Image (tube, rainbow, N blue to C red):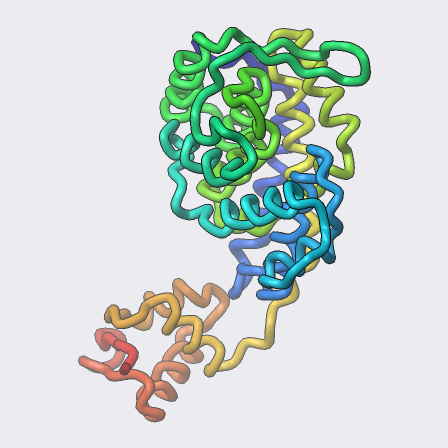
Length: 320
């Protein structure tokens, strides 16, 4: 069965706002955040997601662990951070439409913390908030079938990827397929789906923003449970994605563009593959034909590039 949700005007409006931000990113000559910003946002992502689960390590402590330095803290909390850092570091290894890949990510995320890491749960689970049971997950024997349905939905449903990623996040919380670690793996998988939709989301700290709105996060999960569909959660998730992406786009400061920096970026992009002036201009979207020609001539004159052919028909390749 398809996970139940409704597409509302508010949801469509939020998608439009996110798409406009993505358009701003795509218009930049160098759309990837600077290294220090990528690192800072990765720390915020890991710390935020684990803090929701009660981990008390600070941003400074998570930064130290990310850099390989020793930290004084509870052994299990340090292990949680190290595991999460590893999962996010290996993000590109995971296939967002694969149940096996989800199990692999959970095995890394919960390795050394949970005996059944990387396996569907075998018993019943419920979520307690305060003194009340806020959610009773489906029986364990239904988990494989429910997860199969969820991944079929991700593979075949025509809904917008921003919607499907949020629905998946909610369904992972609802199904609770693992004995523990469902929250952090659900947030990670949400980010993984977003990253496969557009690479800018790899460094967009949605998890950190959810931590800032933790009460609403749990409240909207409960609202969706009671309603029998994830519409409210989808709307909330899109709001968090929009705010996190808006903050990232504002923080990106384009570095001064010179022939040298443009050629360095082209080397990273093309490697030893031949490319044309047209390919070079596709990489540097704001470049004029004349400037592109001057860049490539400078590369040839400096011995950085080799050239075959002449004028517009020329093809180039980086030496060494």
